[in-house]
Image (cartoon, rainbow, N blue to C red; front, side, top):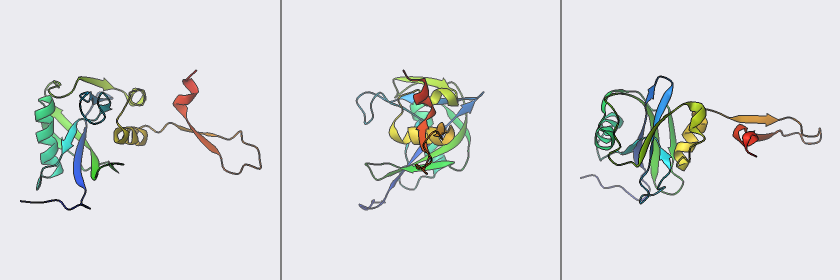
Length: 157
């Protein structure tokens, strides 16, 4: 049996399921860490399990989906509080997603993604996927470093 050491990070897979220009996100149960926040579906890798095996198992358990293909991770982020590394993996599935463990599911465009209350690691991936940084060049000449702002903040009143 594999025992993790205190400094060892646990792998977590997050499925990026893209259909017709929309990605699937799921609302976490309110009684779990980051409860009621949105995430890309997936979960922890079991000892000895590959990313593909973990994503296939997790999507079947959580959503009743069958994975037909998964690619290499396109993004990875270390959790800020726990010894976890989350791998965002483009995944092709068949079937209709059913929320067996989540409160709700949504198919969203990249532009809509950042308007959802995402868990912190999922927000990092969403910002990577759909950068919304706008550089404010209106600073005075003595201010040599431009200020970056989130483009969505321009729409907030």
